[in-house]
Length: 230
Image 1: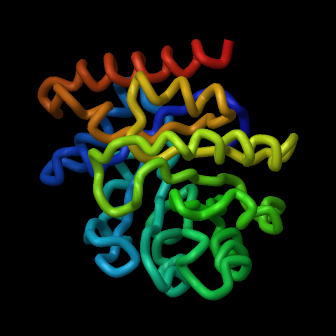
Image 2: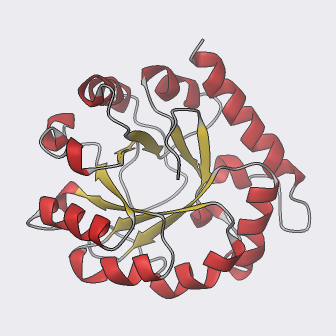
Image 3: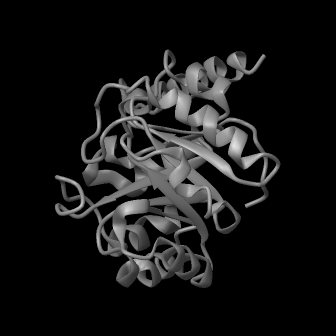
């Protein structure tokens, strides 16, 4: 994973056909996505249950690029090694997912993955100010975590600007997760984000047997974000 600040589209497989994950991952990559985003939920930290390490291991052979695993689980530390062994390139944990987030980030890097930290809408940017030298990615939740298809929370755009200023020239990605579409993508891209997670906005209108709409959706989101950068 070479670092750059170009716009990267990371479709969330939470919006994919659950019966065809492998084919869906291959389809979105063939249609031009940059990363594949896996939303892991435990029914405890967030009000939904999705995937575990076994799912990540199963889809890994179908993903040629980056598998971006977002752990919305607590406690998170006991599962880091399993997700790393399943092939996660990036593992992101929430600030509130454990008593010692510093130790969690150490464990992620120690397992050989890039370390991400996620901020819920109510979590201030300042909460990661002492952790920036330990992370490779900061994920700003622009919806409350737990379900796909929610509306974008516009107050989070200011948080992205704050983080961009705090990060400076550090090689840290700013990722946006929640409500990303051609309308909201330019807002966060202009504020400093470079990784855009989109679920229904990518998968809408397409299928494994007709993946062309995936490519159209990816290109539309990317063009809108890139145009906002000027």
